[in-house]
Length: 158
Image (cartoon, rainbow, N blue to C red; front, side):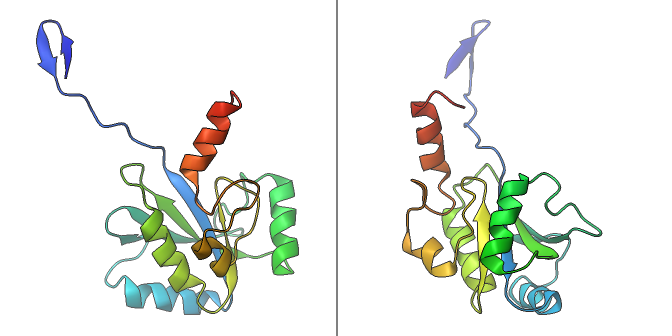
């Protein structure tokens, strides 16, 4: 514990920043919404998993999909999918938890019938087998916030 003005103060745990995964499932948006409703019942806008993953549908028309993406990353995604997706499942992961197991569980559910996922750490659009197998692309695994941090600290970037 730290001492401040002669008193012992409890140290707060270090929080990670919120991290985001975008999932582009094969199939129709309505099918994905129904899937989320079945597995995360009695909630929506957002759906939540264990109070640590916040899951919502985003699109370009009514939402903010791709609004803060690097245009090159959008081009890479379009090439991998074969067209420009009009919607995605956005999963925000609380900084309070590691979240890796929960993210893997959600993408396994959402990509069971195909599609791709992206994370905050590489421009690579991940297939389900790549993400779950621990494949390394550009020096990182899917949702590899620890590896990303280590690479950036070693190279002097933050």
